Length: 146
Ligand SMILES: Cc1cc2nc3c(=O)[nH]c(=O)nc-3n(C[C@H](O)[C@H](O)[C@H](O)COP(=O)(O)O)c2cc1C
Image (spheres, rainbow, N blue to C red):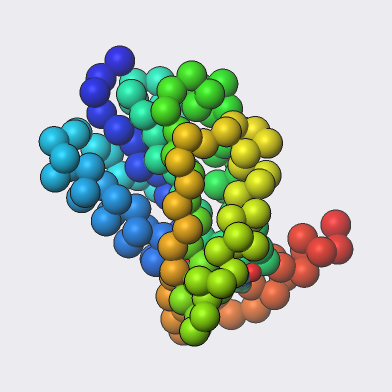
């Protein structure tokens, strides 16, 4: 096993990628070797000494590919330090901080699979021009209907 830390992210419009890069930068400044990668590009996490994984929130949930990442790597994640984070607009709202306890529960499905040693809740950004037209509706409604 290397001394590297993996920072894996799932992002639709870039803000979670930005948070992941910022986390990676801090870890590098602390003297750690870090890979910052999109979750879907990660095949094997066994070489890493620790993993930080985060997703943008849609419909009060991690993105589907982020949950799939946890399911796929559940056993390996459980055997090493694992931290989870989310990025959402609720915390970017005025008075958003008062919703932190509520927002923290959006990580509950992750905790059920693998208990993180640390959790991060970050304010995101929403550039509506970056959201694929119509796809957000079918995505969100698909979750409710099926
Ligand atoms: C279709 C859609 C659904 C969203 N649902 C929520 C939500 O339920 N709660 C919330 O706080 N933010 C929600 N957001 C805001 C995103 O979580 C926020 O813009 C985040 O920064 C996006 O991360 P990304 O740029 O990495 O994709 C939603 C955004 C979109 C486009």
